[in-house]
Length: 147
Image 1 (tube, one colour):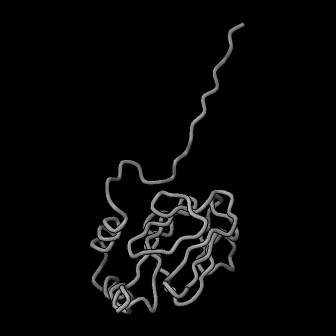
Image 2 (spheres, one colour):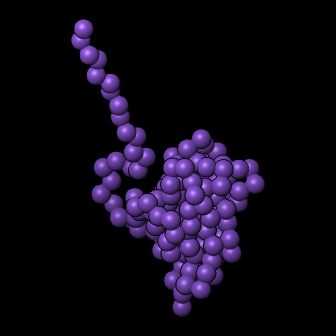
Image 3 (cartoon, rainbow, N blue to C red):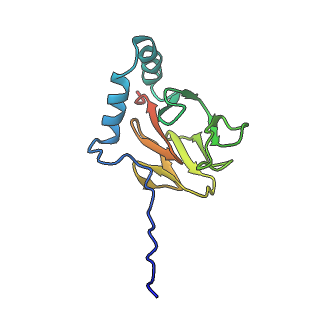
């Protein structure tokens, strides 16, 4: 009797073949926006770190943007500040909270993990242009430099 080999594959949710830096991804995304959308994001950048924004760059909610001023929850729960409707996202997946040095992303014990610039993170201080991956979603972080 012949043995059958099982074929297994691993699903890697990051963008394949991208040689771009995270800041380069943000620049590409911003270049594709309409002038009115770019004006809104430019105001966040000009805020000097008072506020920040998360932009969904891939997924069914591509183009959605979320203003951050203090704390935001991210997850599949409808009560999340940033609602990502996909089974790859935990109900309470992560949160972004403003601290003394800036905005921190903290994984909330999610099943699939939270990644920043393709590196799994439990807590990280976000920088302008960082790419956050939560499930199938890729989000870009926008913040101005403190003056």
